[in-house]
Image (cartoon, rainbow, N blue to C red):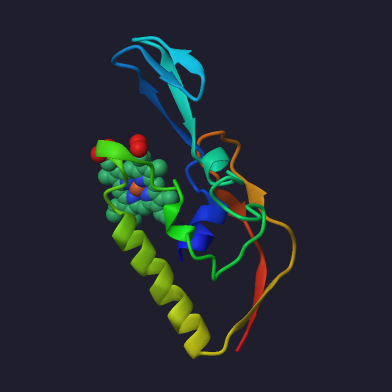
Length: 125
Ligand code: HEM
């Protein structure tokens, strides 16, 4: 589940306002600065994830992904989201379903969420 959530990164970024001056990664962030946290970029950080652009479901550190954010506002529904995906895949595999993607997905016009709006599939089982 974690590798799928890392790879997809459904929420692309969140924004914070700095409460104090700080140096981060060699950059100065001033109190009051508005900062975008690009989860989609962190999830492709090659210093953390080997071959980050590949979906590798057995990736040992997939749970280090940032798709649920971090800190006090980290996603409160993360465990539910993981369980929903796990149950979905358990049932797909138990039924031996084959899901064939017919055309590439279309996405919502958004830089905040990576949200497919249309993904035609054929299900054989
Ligand atoms: C794969 C599915 C999901 C993803 C990728 C996701 C991602 C996120 C992200 C990135 C944040 C903001 C974290 C931050 O600001 O640092 C967030 C917050 C939140 N999420 Fe999710 N979420 C998912 C599913 C869910 C579900 C299923 C629920 C509820 C049942 C949920 C409820 C919330 C709530 C209430 C917050 C706000 C927490 C706060 O501000 O303290 N999320 N989520």
